[in-house]
Image (cartoon, rainbow, N blue to C red; front, side, top):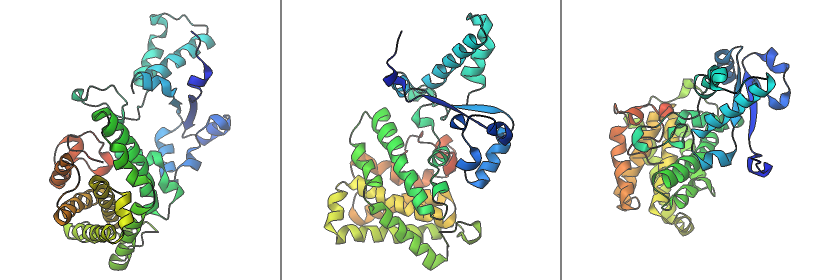
Length: 338
């Protein structure tokens, strides 16, 4: 069966290895240069872990995964790998002849981007809900581009995150589409979230002497709840005052959920950057929601109130994703929101 090239022209294969000598011997267009594309510490750790082995990074045609599911990625790539081996080595195409190769290509030698979701989600492997937040942050790689501006790097992750987790995962996969687009665009259009976040950066520098432009564990603030309370309250009240002072802000973020999400994001970023602790940032988010409701009576549509009021209590729970530290979490828990 012939396929129009235009339908599959976004598929490609690149390779990466921890052996720089091997990488130098390969065509540059096919190589992911770990030393150039990762911050020095990450590159060193990744190269040591990969060692002398050679891995492929495969991007299957978008139409394949959209027609089927996330699990299609490994099946599709395994089929192409198998056919390439069969053609190159004049192999028989029967199951017995290629059984080990098929097992390696489909299972043993595959690392999916996302972990498998529980059966109740009724999803295949490698779906957006299984992509951990820490992995996602590394994928965006904004800290490589903005090493001296963790606020900007974090805002880039937020912008991409609301697209994948809110618009695609929550908005489409989980709910069928109920306006999540408007809720998420507030985080990556204009510079309102940026303004609130940089206010927080100025605050932690002035009050806590955190040199946020030069990230270091030496000057991070110990993440006590008093600290989270102070940072999140300052940023939240400033943002609420801005909305009340400038009508155009309220017109731009016309929904309560938009305002709640943006204010909480700025509060969470301030707490996490100021302390170097993702759980402190998470609690800054949840505290902001409570302050917001206390000040303006509600957050947004009715269902939005639930998950962000119980979140603080759940942030250190023993339940799977819900109780994991931020870097190990994904969006796969019942009260996940943004």
